[in-house]
Image 1 (tube, rainbow, N blue to C red):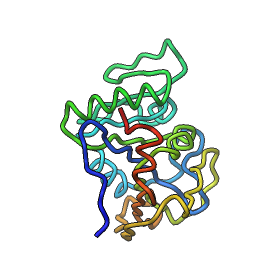
Image 2 (image 1 turned 90 degrees about the vertical axis):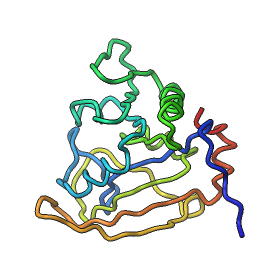
Image 3 (image 1 turned 45 degrees about the vertical axis):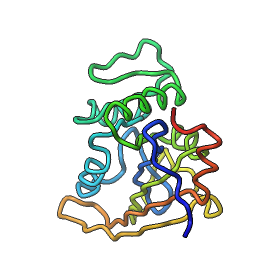
Image 4 (image 1 turned 60 degrees about the vertical axis):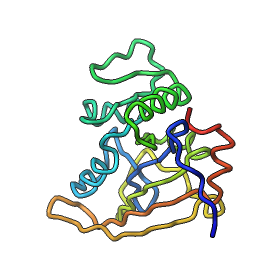
Length: 191
Protein backbone atom coordinates (compact mmCIF):
# COMPACT_ATOMS: atom_id res chain seq x y z
CA UNK A 1 0.00 0.00 0.00
CA UNK A 2 1.34 3.41 -1.01
CA UNK A 3 1.88 5.93 1.78
CA UNK A 4 -0.09 9.13 1.37
CA UNK A 5 1.22 12.54 2.33
CA UNK A 6 -0.36 13.33 5.69
CA UNK A 7 -2.86 16.16 5.69
CA UNK A 8 -1.58 18.96 7.85
CA UNK A 9 -3.23 22.23 8.72
CA UNK A 10 0.30 23.65 8.85
CA UNK A 11 0.61 23.02 5.10
CA UNK A 12 -2.72 23.23 3.30
CA UNK A 13 -2.94 21.73 -0.16
CA UNK A 14 -3.12 24.08 -3.13
CA UNK A 15 -6.07 23.16 -5.35
CA UNK A 16 -6.37 24.77 -8.78
CA UNK A 17 -10.02 25.06 -9.84
CA UNK A 18 -10.90 25.97 -13.45
CA UNK A 19 -13.45 25.55 -16.20
CA UNK A 20 -11.59 24.89 -19.45
CA UNK A 21 -13.03 24.50 -22.95
CA UNK A 22 -11.90 21.65 -25.19
CA UNK A 23 -9.67 24.17 -27.01
CA UNK A 24 -8.04 25.40 -23.77
CA UNK A 25 -9.99 28.67 -23.56
CA UNK A 26 -11.00 29.92 -20.11
CA UNK A 27 -12.04 33.49 -20.85
CA UNK A 28 -12.99 36.11 -23.39
CA UNK A 29 -13.22 39.88 -22.90
CA UNK A 30 -13.12 39.56 -19.11
CA UNK A 31 -15.91 37.00 -18.84
CA UNK A 32 -16.51 33.28 -19.15
CA UNK A 33 -17.34 32.42 -22.78
CA UNK A 34 -20.21 30.14 -21.70
CA UNK A 35 -23.00 29.91 -19.18
CA UNK A 36 -22.86 26.84 -16.95
CA UNK A 37 -25.06 27.28 -13.88
CA UNK A 38 -24.48 23.64 -12.92
CA UNK A 39 -20.73 24.19 -12.79
CA UNK A 40 -21.13 27.40 -10.80
CA UNK A 41 -23.02 25.35 -8.19
CA UNK A 42 -20.18 22.81 -8.25
CA UNK A 43 -17.61 25.62 -7.81
CA UNK A 44 -19.55 27.02 -4.86
CA UNK A 45 -19.83 23.62 -3.15
CA UNK A 46 -16.13 22.90 -3.71
CA UNK A 47 -14.83 26.25 -2.46
CA UNK A 48 -17.31 27.17 0.27
CA UNK A 49 -15.53 27.56 3.61
CA UNK A 50 -12.08 27.71 1.99
CA UNK A 51 -9.89 30.69 1.16
CA UNK A 52 -10.01 31.45 -2.58
CA UNK A 53 -7.13 33.16 -4.41
CA UNK A 54 -7.77 34.93 -7.71
CA UNK A 55 -6.35 37.65 -9.90
CA UNK A 56 -7.83 41.14 -10.14
CA UNK A 57 -9.40 40.53 -13.55
CA UNK A 58 -11.07 37.35 -12.32
CA UNK A 59 -12.36 39.26 -9.30
CA UNK A 60 -13.67 42.03 -11.59
CA UNK A 61 -15.52 39.43 -13.68
CA UNK A 62 -17.21 38.08 -10.54
CA UNK A 63 -17.85 41.59 -9.24
CA UNK A 64 -17.96 40.87 -5.51
CA UNK A 65 -16.29 38.86 -2.75
CA UNK A 66 -17.38 35.23 -2.63
CA UNK A 67 -19.79 34.64 0.27
CA UNK A 68 -18.58 32.15 2.88
CA UNK A 69 -15.00 32.30 1.62
CA UNK A 70 -12.06 34.61 2.22
CA UNK A 71 -11.37 36.19 -1.16
CA UNK A 72 -7.68 36.98 -1.73
CA UNK A 73 -7.03 39.11 -4.83
CA UNK A 74 -3.60 39.30 -6.46
CA UNK A 75 -2.97 42.67 -8.11
CA UNK A 76 -0.02 44.85 -9.05
CA UNK A 77 -2.22 47.91 -8.52
CA UNK A 78 -1.14 49.10 -5.07
CA UNK A 79 -4.17 51.39 -4.95
CA UNK A 80 -6.64 48.53 -5.44
CA UNK A 81 -9.22 48.40 -2.67
CA UNK A 82 -12.42 46.38 -2.66
CA UNK A 83 -14.64 45.85 0.36
CA UNK A 84 -14.54 42.30 1.68
CA UNK A 85 -11.34 41.18 -0.05
CA UNK A 86 -7.69 40.95 0.91
CA UNK A 87 -5.50 42.51 -1.81
CA UNK A 88 -1.89 41.34 -2.14
CA UNK A 89 0.88 42.08 -4.66
CA UNK A 90 1.86 38.54 -5.72
CA UNK A 91 1.00 34.87 -5.58
CA UNK A 92 3.44 34.15 -2.74
CA UNK A 93 1.77 36.74 -0.51
CA UNK A 94 -1.65 35.43 -1.53
CA UNK A 95 -0.75 31.87 -0.57
CA UNK A 96 0.64 33.01 2.79
CA UNK A 97 -2.57 34.92 3.60
CA UNK A 98 -4.75 32.07 2.33
CA UNK A 99 -2.82 29.41 4.26
CA UNK A 100 -3.21 31.37 7.49
CA UNK A 101 -6.93 31.67 6.77
CA UNK A 102 -7.17 27.93 6.03
CA UNK A 103 -5.56 27.14 9.39
CA UNK A 104 -7.94 29.56 11.14
CA UNK A 105 -10.91 27.87 9.43
CA UNK A 106 -9.58 24.37 10.11
CA UNK A 107 -9.57 23.38 6.42
CA UNK A 108 -6.79 21.58 4.56
CA UNK A 109 -6.90 23.38 1.20
CA UNK A 110 -6.45 26.74 -0.45
CA UNK A 111 -8.36 27.16 -3.72
CA UNK A 112 -6.94 29.05 -6.71
CA UNK A 113 -9.62 30.26 -9.12
CA UNK A 114 -7.77 32.11 -11.86
CA UNK A 115 -6.97 33.79 -14.04
CA UNK A 116 -4.63 32.59 -16.71
CA UNK A 117 -1.43 34.15 -15.37
CA UNK A 118 -1.97 32.80 -11.85
CA UNK A 119 -2.84 29.36 -13.20
CA UNK A 120 0.41 29.28 -15.18
CA UNK A 121 2.44 30.34 -12.15
CA UNK A 122 0.72 27.96 -9.70
CA UNK A 123 0.93 24.79 -11.83
CA UNK A 124 4.53 24.25 -10.73
CA UNK A 125 3.55 23.69 -7.11
CA UNK A 126 -0.17 22.92 -6.99
CA UNK A 127 -1.16 19.65 -5.33
CA UNK A 128 -4.47 19.03 -7.09
CA UNK A 129 -6.46 20.23 -10.07
CA UNK A 130 -10.24 20.24 -10.33
CA UNK A 131 -10.99 20.95 -13.98
CA UNK A 132 -14.42 21.27 -15.50
CA UNK A 133 -13.93 20.24 -19.12
CA UNK A 134 -16.43 22.31 -21.09
CA UNK A 135 -17.23 20.44 -24.30
CA UNK A 136 -17.19 23.47 -26.57
CA UNK A 137 -14.57 25.42 -28.52
CA UNK A 138 -15.36 29.12 -28.03
CA UNK A 139 -13.18 31.98 -29.19
CA UNK A 140 -11.22 33.43 -26.31
CA UNK A 141 -8.30 35.56 -25.23
CA UNK A 142 -7.24 33.68 -22.07
CA UNK A 143 -6.20 30.04 -21.92
CA UNK A 144 -5.35 27.42 -19.34
CA UNK A 145 -1.80 26.02 -19.29
CA UNK A 146 -1.33 22.49 -20.63
CA UNK A 147 -1.79 19.65 -18.13
CA UNK A 148 1.34 17.55 -18.51
CA UNK A 149 0.46 13.83 -18.12
CA UNK A 150 4.01 13.20 -16.88
CA UNK A 151 3.27 15.50 -13.93
CA UNK A 152 -0.48 15.05 -13.41
CA UNK A 153 -2.55 11.89 -13.22
CA UNK A 154 -6.29 11.93 -13.62
CA UNK A 155 -7.91 10.27 -10.62
CA UNK A 156 -11.58 10.95 -11.32
CA UNK A 157 -13.79 11.83 -14.29
CA UNK A 158 -17.47 12.50 -13.72
CA UNK A 159 -19.83 13.52 -16.54
CA UNK A 160 -21.75 16.65 -15.61
CA UNK A 161 -25.50 16.73 -15.64
CA UNK A 162 -26.32 19.75 -17.80
CA UNK A 163 -29.37 21.70 -16.81
CA UNK A 164 -31.55 24.11 -18.79
CA UNK A 165 -29.20 26.99 -17.89
CA UNK A 166 -26.08 25.32 -19.30
CA UNK A 167 -24.66 26.23 -22.71
CA UNK A 168 -22.61 23.04 -23.16
CA UNK A 169 -22.08 19.55 -21.80
CA UNK A 170 -19.20 19.21 -19.36
CA UNK A 171 -17.11 16.71 -17.42
CA UNK A 172 -15.49 17.29 -14.04
CA UNK A 173 -11.96 15.89 -13.89
CA UNK A 174 -9.79 15.66 -10.81
CA UNK A 175 -6.03 15.38 -11.05
CA UNK A 176 -3.34 14.72 -8.49
CA UNK A 177 0.31 15.41 -8.93
CA UNK A 178 2.09 12.20 -9.91
CA UNK A 179 4.48 12.87 -7.03
CA UNK A 180 2.61 15.02 -4.50
CA UNK A 181 5.53 15.03 -2.08
CA UNK A 182 7.74 16.65 -4.73
CA UNK A 183 5.30 19.57 -5.06
CA UNK A 184 5.31 20.11 -1.32
CA UNK A 185 9.11 19.95 -1.22
CA UNK A 186 9.44 22.49 -4.05
CA UNK A 187 7.30 25.05 -2.29
CA UNK A 188 7.62 23.99 1.32
CA UNK A 189 3.86 23.51 1.39
CA UNK A 190 1.48 26.43 1.21
CA UNK A 191 2.74 28.38 4.17
